[in-house]
Length: 237
Image (cartoon, rainbow, N blue to C red; front, top):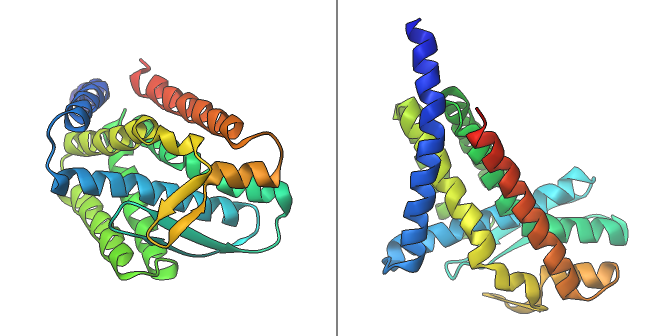
């Protein structure tokens, strides 16, 4: 009886943590947030973005060679292999919807205390493996190591309720980045620390057909659909 009641309380706490996290995130984005707080949150979306490219490449048989994250919030993922035009477009789109995919997974995981804790363990382990295998610049190594370490600490030491809040908070950051950085979906040039490069939507357009802004709109709509699905699961009775 006590165990069932505790489980029910955990399921109720998930949506509460999610709503509070979303509201807190909105206040941070539109309020006077210090750069030392704001910058790491931007870098989180860059991390999800670049991993989206790399893991999409690996998913279709290409080699995820390396990725780098820079302190200005930009990043680059390097992959190798012959995947054809459709594969190139898929890899480019993988980075654009990456933040929404991770956010949707975290929203769904936050619904239950146990799934939240297990998801944090999974992400920490996955980031540690990627840190060893593919991160190739000093700043990126430091940032990914910090995220993996903090996530492991929360999974180890945090209560199940706090793990739900942590999943919800990180998911809210990534979810909002879909909108706060939406301008990237409608530009053909990306400004990075390595200099100007063709944007992801420009690369999709080059690989397939239609103008870059058409693919930006498609990726944006897909990201919103993924976020909504994660929220529906999170708030499901």
